[in-house]
Amino acid sequence: MNIENIDNLKLNFEEVVKQYQNDLKKMKTGRASTELVEGIQVEYFGTRTPLVHMANVSVLDAKTIEISPWNKVQIKEIQKAISKSDLGLNPSDDGNVIRIVIPLMTEERRLDLVKQLGKKTEEMKIRMRRHREDFWSGIQKNEREGEISEDEKFKAKDDLQKIVDEYNKKLDEIEAKKKQDLMQI
View (cartoon, rainbow, N blue to C red):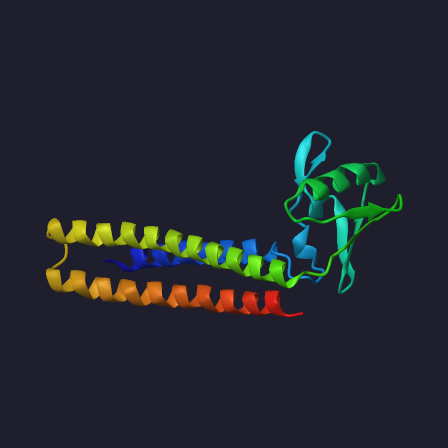
């Protein structure tokens, strides 16, 4: 097990954590956030374009997001894309800007989101397990081919487990913080 392989494994784990954080930004908490809509893909002159690349997105207050398209002709396309997204948002426009009022979340909806959060966390841990298994297979192969000793193999296994535990802890901390946000009224 060399340093380069460990660094690659850590990079893979960092990618999993980043993806997890990005996915959680899209999860509604009952408060307005620009991250909720920035990534929505809108048909823009024949190309699927993220909303943030074609409009100013801002938060007016704790419950309202305002979208000001650079090209006012695109308002209807933006509204359609927001309505079609799985976010359950209902945009309205006045001809110049689009406003989205974030509805209050019921207790049932909050609990449903917490379940979704748990599933998403488990998905990310599974991705990390796949990276770990690939890495462990490489270590075992190196030992079979005589490149490392059995003692080095078991030391590498211990080091590997420490890294996995560290990143699982990161995911758990992010999950706990998001769960607290979701359950906050």
